[in-house]
Length: 430
Ligand SMILES: *Cc1c(COP(=O)(O)O)cnc(C)c1O
Image (cartoon, rainbow, N blue to C red):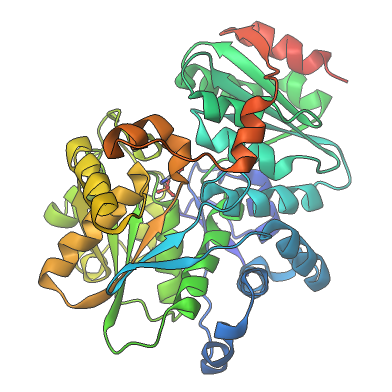
């Protein structure tokens, strides 16, 4: 399996090279030259496979000669060591609970696989992962790399701009994880990281890499839970629809890949908050990026989704073909809160604001269509405790693992928004 760039300005390269580079040299996203087709035999046996076995099989198709079979198997088993249950919430409607990993959000799936692949591909030398975060990515990446030998992680985050839960999830880990509390915004943090990559002295001192969300190592493993959900679903003659709460569209694009490999999902729903460039594109055929607006489903506050380029590539930029497989809906915060509250009153099921957007979109689709629907619950409601408690007028139970994290002492290094200081910090480390 080889990879090209969505900008078509580079040569084909290997899986390993694409993982290590992250972004292609022409600033495009890496993309496999072909989508592997699964055999009938696969579909006879896949229902009995464990999550990590499915993950291993699928990643084996995409990683080519870059990694030995036994190594990949071991790595996927370590990475996918938590459950992803499919929970029925009402007739023909299921919640795929992607929040049972260590940081209680679906990003654990991609981040845990990425960490192990990067550690394997850089095993000849020590490397440092730089990651700027506005909250969730930092914790998933830091936890993914925690305790992995030969790799250090430096998380940069904007002081006072992440929630207490998010902050504790990456400032209490210790070991190979260091958190820098930057007196600036998320954009400032991102700019510092970018600048470090183009700094000769920093690069000379040691290997630095990123674990950016556009990396194929984070994007591809997400295919696994679409297969895993289909394996858990009861036999049905009805069409099957997946509704995906979307920001950068990595999650949804992985689902589209699964469909193109032969998984019998009829349609996907792009569910968004008022940052609705993709639902608008699906309606009008015009893609008009705009600055992001803050909402209560803040992991989806994206005005120019990076993975959109991969969707275009998958459908040869053909809007008609895209809209055959994909339909979009968007919701305001008010509608999201009402959805959470109605669902709780009716069924007792607690949605987080992101899952609520996906559920609302699915229900809208099911008004006019008879189908079985699965919506992706991408975060544990406790991660958005204040919003959820206010919407439902209840006191939420906090999972034990999270309670333990909240009790730990925060450790971070304060830093001004200054490249000089950041550089001195990186060069001064052992
Ligand atoms: C990141 C995130 C999303 C959006 O996922 P994309 O792959 O960027 O579309 C949705 N929900 C939660 C909880 C997230 O953390």
